[in-house]
Each structure stands twice: as C-alpha cells, then as structure tokens.
Image (cartoon, rainbow, N blue to C red; front, side, top):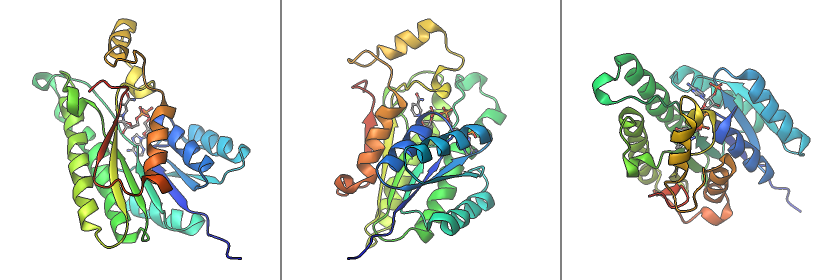
Length: 246
Ligand code: NDP
C-alpha cells in the first residue's frame, strides 16, 4: 500500500476574516496549512489552535507579503515545515476607500504594495517552486463588476490581480497548475465592516437578490472547490461569489 504525502496549502492573510475561514476549510479538506499573517500574531495562533483541535495540521508564519525577501523566506519556511506548497491562496489584502480626487499618494502606494505587489511576490515564488498539479487562487473583488464610487484604487489592484493570474495560468502550461480568482461581494469581516454606518451596511447587503452579506465560509467554499479535486478543469477564470450582485 502506498501512503500519499499530505498536501500543503499556503494561505496569505489567514489570521482573520476570509483568509482564516479558507485556512480552516482547507485543513478540513485534508491539507497541512500555513497560516500567514503580517501583524496579528495571536489571531494567527488561534487559527492554528482551532485547526489542530479539529484534528488538522497547521503552522503560523509571519511575513509581510509586500516584501519579496519575506515572501521568499515564507516559501522556504513552508517547505522546511510541511513541504513546498501545493496550493497557494492569496487572501492578504487591504482596502481604503476614497474618491480619486481626494486620494492620497500614501494610500495609493500602500494599496498597490500590499494587494498587487504582494500577490506578484507570492505568484513569482509559486511559479518557480510549485510542484506539478498545484492550484493557485487569488482573492479579487466583485467591485471590478459593480464599479462603486470610492473603490477606484482598491478595485484597480484587484482587476490587475485577475489579469496577472490569467496570464500566469498560460505561462504554467505543461505543469498541470491552475490559477483562478475568487471575487467576493460584501463579506462580513473587519475589512468590510470598518468605517461603515449600519445604514451603509444594510444597503450593501441588499445589493444581491439573496439579501444578505456574504460570510467568510461562503468564500471558503468557493476556494475549496477550486483547490480541490473537482475544480481541476477550471483554469484562468474569475468566480464571482456574491449571491448574484453582479
Ligand atoms: P480582513 O481585513 O478581515 O483580513 C485581512 C488579512 O490580510 C489579515 O489576516 C491580515 O493580517 C492580512 N494582511 C494584511 N496586510 C498584509 C500583509 N502586508 N502581509 C500579510 N498579510 C497581510 O480582510 P478580509 O478577510 O475581508 O479580506 C480578505 C481578502 O478578500 C482581501 O484580499 C480582500 O480584498 C478580499 N475581499 C474582501 C471582501 C469583503 O467584503 N470582506 C470583498 C471582496 C474581496 P494581519 O491582521 O496580521 O495584518
């Protein structure tokens, strides 16, 4: 009897919100999970503890995805712990809303550095190191479809991520690695809730015909499909997970 090696999933920005739900779901799916975080050390360790108490394997690894050297180390450390990641999920992201006319350079640079450069940094490492048969899922946003005012800088980084991922899916020809994006609509996490009034939240939750906010688990379900055995024929696509908003 051959014993199959347990596959590894690296989830960036997995200390909170959608990334944490993805890490827990992929652990339940049977992956050994690397829970990446930037600052929320305790939250990341709580995610690991939750996975372990459910019988899974996980480790928390700190790395700022915007820094290429830290991302290279993240892959090195992942390899040394659980093996080279078979699955990469880019969930680390920030969102600051502002109309273009009043957007500050600092906000623009920081959003590009975390969302776009951060995803570029991990995609480059994955392109070099990921074994044949791997899966990559990038978190985009459904705002690339609804184009709401004040989301310009943020949505631009996500549109770029979608295209970069689609092109990578073609560059990886011959290695049986898929690259897709999942584009959530409004999802109940700190990123979405912070700075919004109850009225704004209620309004945004009614944009979809199911009339509720997404939950992190709704998004984790979509990622699980793309990262799992049944999603293998989906490649170079964006799956909007938003209850039908757009
Ligand atoms: P949260 O703000 O709840 O969590 C963000 C996560 O990203 C945290 O774990 C945070 O870690 C991590 N992170 C932030 N900056 C960095 C960095 N430089 N390096 C490594 N990790 C970092 O966000 P969500 O869970 O809501 O969002 C997850 C993804 O989904 C994002 O890419 C977001 O753009 C996307 N999305 C979210 C939607 C929503 O409505 N919530 C809708 C559409 C898309 P730490 O705490 O350690 O800083």
